[in-house]
Amino acid sequence: MEASKTIEHEIGGLKNDALRFGLQGVKSDIIGSHPLESAFQSAIVREEQMKRKVLANTYGSAFPLKQDFDRKILSRYSFSCWFTIQAISFAKLCS
Picture 1 (cartoon, rainbow, N blue to C red):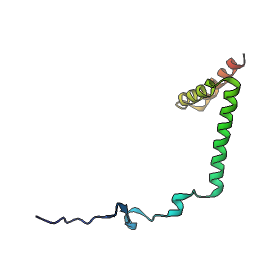
Picture 2: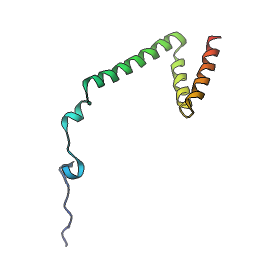
Picture 3: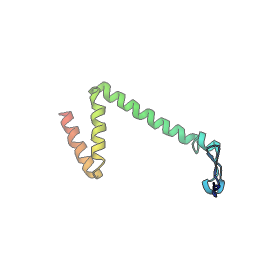
Picture 4: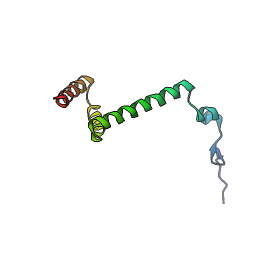
């Protein structure tokens, strides 16, 4: 039987070839690029959750879901179309 003429580049299931796969940094895998960046992202998430809770408490639990559906549908169109439809739906909501 003929021996294989290829060399395995994976040792122990890990890709250790730095020239082919780049240098692996443990620190970059654990944290983001800067601590303020992660704090900023978590603040945005908290603010969005708070807005959704306020809308759910004010208009009912279905309102944030409706907004999500509208946002997904309107993401396919231009911003001017989105602004017009949001203004019309807001006018209907207020009347």
